[in-house]
Structure formats: C-alpha cells, structure tokens
Length: 191
Image 1: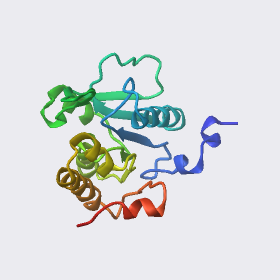
Image 2: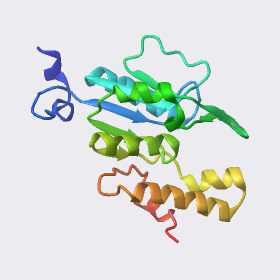
Image 3: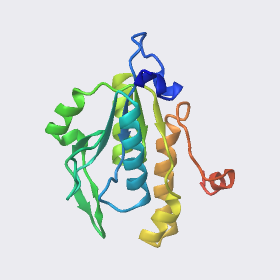
Image 4: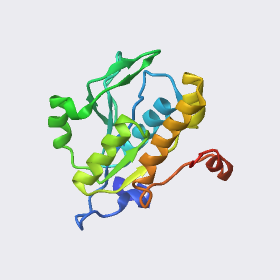
C-alpha cells in the first residue's frame, strides 16, 4: 500500500489542487531541552507531524544544548537570550535576526500553529498573514496563574492575561482553542 494512503485524511487534503501533503509550521517559545509541558508537547507533535506530513518546521528561539540530529522535522530558530529569573526559557526578536529571516523566507507553509501567544505566536501570526495561510493556536497554560506565580501581582497578572486574550482575539475566526474544560474559559477575565 502506498505510504500516502495510510496517512490520516486531514493530512491528505489537496492544497491548491496539486495533491501534495501539508507543510506545517509549529511556532513555540519553548522546545526541548527545556523541560516543561509545552516543550514536550511541541516536540512530540512535531515528531508525529514530521512523519505524517510533507514537512514540519518548528520555529523557536535558539536553545542551548539542543540536539538536532535525526529529527523528522526541521528547526528554524531565531536568536534568543535567557529570560531574567527564568534562565531555562529564552526570548528573541525574529524580525531582527537576518539569518532567521533568510531561512524562513524560503519556507512555504500550508498552516501555522501558534503554541504561544508571545514572541513565537506573534511570528506565527505574521507568517500566516504574509503567506496567506490558516493560523491555529493552542492554549497550553492558565496564563493568569503563571503570571501571578512569577509576579505575585494581580494587576500585572491581569495585564499579562489581557495581552494573551488580545493576541487570540485578533484572529478568533481561525483559532482552535484547546482548553481543558468549558469552566477553564471562565477563568479568563475579559475585564
């Protein structure tokens, strides 16, 4: 049996009538070796998509000690620096990284998946608009709680939460929200 015929139907969708498999971009602010839930989810998801799709790309800030050999997906990283008080996490500005911009300009995606509402998510939004492709996103966290754990400030946590809501709201017609339950949605203050 032809390998393409064993793939899930959603991945066999013809794009622009040419019958090819999808090219997916996974945009994340964390990736292994960062040991957190998002990094593990993105890594596992990209491995599965890398085997099922024509191509899977993970777009993320550069990570120290990241093993890139024998992966079924390609990492397109942009310069990153450690975050204060959160040294395992890195942030960067993809728009200022000429090497990254050169590499990402050569990648034509069929869909962008934002795993974060922060720098990588905003890059997913920019790429999806530039390439005219769908954008989906996943909530991997209760952001208000994360902001509060870091800042110990209700005001700063509400402001951070507002940024998250604003990010997903600007493309709500194409977002796929993955919440644990309907009650989790009530935790998102729209004030």
